[in-house]
Length: 201
Image (cartoon, rainbow, N blue to C red; front, side, top):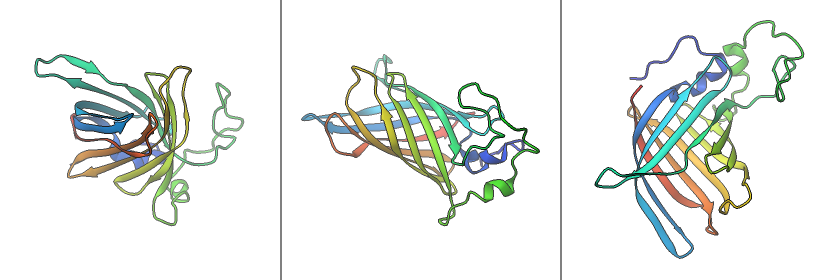
């Protein structure tokens, strides 16, 4: 059973099933440059909110050998939100304050107006990896399932080649399942990693 907070901003309700800290294991397997990279990894994911209209996200993953020695993989942090046009009552860009006061908080009715013909909501996910790569994903949340694909990837000088990605998240029997496909190191978009996580907080 998933307990949902009752004080969520309306814009977060379609994403509320993600809230919490999730831990588990996953499998990495990817063919690139004539070799197969594979292994089982441990994964910890956190979705939280601070009263704003976005979920805060952080994730870490690591390999652990039979002796308990840990090798960290790339960590990531970011924000997940419903896609909607910014209004004068929204702050930004940068540190700029809102240009007009919001008469009242956004309501469930306001959010329902964003529902797509397919019955879901368009979302935007902005992630930054600890190696400096940034990803902007666009996609949809439909009930307890999310499908997103990169709209843009920004790589710092010296970063490895990374062209595109898709991710799928789903809530199945109380577990968070995800799959991540990537096009990287000269290979076409293909399966990269997947995991099954249990809620621990």
